[in-house]
Image (cartoon, rainbow over the protein chains, first blue to last red):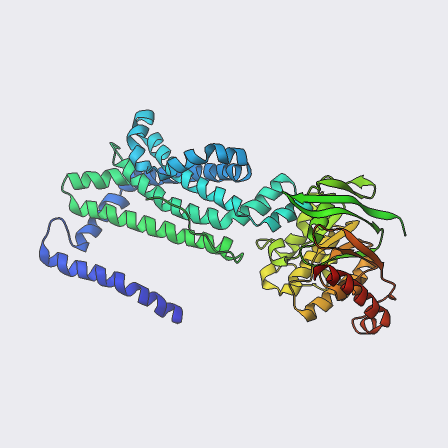
Amino acid sequence: MSRLTGLLWQAILPAALIAGYQFWAVRAHNPYFPPLGAIAREFRATWLGPGFTEHVLPSLWNLVRGYLIGLLAGVAGGVLLGRVRVLRDLLGPLVGFFLTLPAVALLPIFVIALGIGATMQVGVIVFSVFFVVLVNTTAGMRAVDAALIDVGRAYRIGPLRRLFLLLLPAAAPYIVAAARTALSIAVLVMVVSEMVGAPYGIGAVTLLAQQEFQYARMWAGMVLLALLGYSLNAAFALVERFTVGRWGMVATTGEGRS
Amino acid sequence: MSDTLVSVEHLTKFYGDHLAVDGVTFGVRTGEMVSIVGPSGAGKTTALRIVAGLLEPTSGSVTIGGVRVTGPPPDVAVVFQDYSRSLLPWLTVLGNVTLPLRAKGLSRTAARTAALDALAAVGLDGTARRRPRELSGGMQQRVAIARALAYRPKLLVMDEPFASVDAQTRMDLEDLILPLRQEYAVTIMLVTHDIDEAVYLSDRIVVLSPAPSTVLRVIDVDLPLPRSQTATKELPGFARLRHEVLDLVRARTD
């Protein structure tokens, strides 16, 4: 019961905002801000018809590929940087430089190098995810309690078990937090990359709608992206709860970038 | 019975310019329980870490069963001071105890059997599926002890193992260790700053001076076995030994 009332409380403000918008939009007849009904109709027509396979699925497929590649490469690189001092000293400044560089600003370079299309889009997502995960995994590996390292050494735990059963779980609060930050960055980069000359994808359709004065369709794009971001974040909260949460660890706030 | 298992010879350790351990020599016989005591900062833990192969000495040597220690030896198990940091919170109790056994090459079933036996021996039946943080501090340290015993070491090295639990739990754990020595036929080297504990548990006590540490005296504990928290501690011999060790430890700190 208290959980239900909690949910109700949380729903009050969003519901009020939506209702307020609708109340105003119906009366204002402002072409830039269509009423909810029009947005819902466009949402169905644009995203749930043939548009689903034409635009939504390719976008998601790029997102999944780019995110997973960036995540795995970032964790692997972070393990190396965290454990090997020479590498850390050698690559540290470079990694710091790339971390502060917004992936979106590098889009022109990616377009030149990879052309316009899925390869470029996946590439930018990989790039944006990689450095966030790399830096935080490195920090996580550095932060593994010396007592645990001693346990691993004293009991002669071999390299594979040491990595997967000792070091990576110990660094998990950092890695999970980074993976979560990286996911929202990946969604952002996915959309922006599709706004550069792409013939398909959620970002492309949304931008085109704005340029063609199809404002209801543009809003439908916003709604889809909001839903996507929200559900991915919620899914991630579950992942967190069943890993670090269950171990009594707290996810360390990741170092991200905007 | 009286052959030497561990021999520590002229052990010296510098941390930078700071001389922590200065030519420490002592031996531990097979089956014996030897305590290392000394004032805090006396390089007890340093000496223990070198014996366990976790730290390199600046000079001198440690040999265990005739083999010179150059890294963590295969037949040495360690119980660390801080159970909350030395158990893996993402593994179950069983997972924590089996991990070193699996790493040693035991099959899944053999490791499981050995782990369950050790858990039963430390009085933790029925906790195998729990996670460390669901157990009390004393129970967590029992898990760490079970992990060490299941490893079937020749030498068990314990670094202030009962320092982070309350007094009652501490007595329980001390009385747990005594019979397990026989059951697991293990030689024990214990670092402690608690003189009563050293006298109560040990066959011999190595008293170290403050840093730079040297061996002040090696004292034979001739108290009868089995020992008991009440009867043993009331013996005149207990008081005499306690007095002797305390004088040595305090004389050098004042």
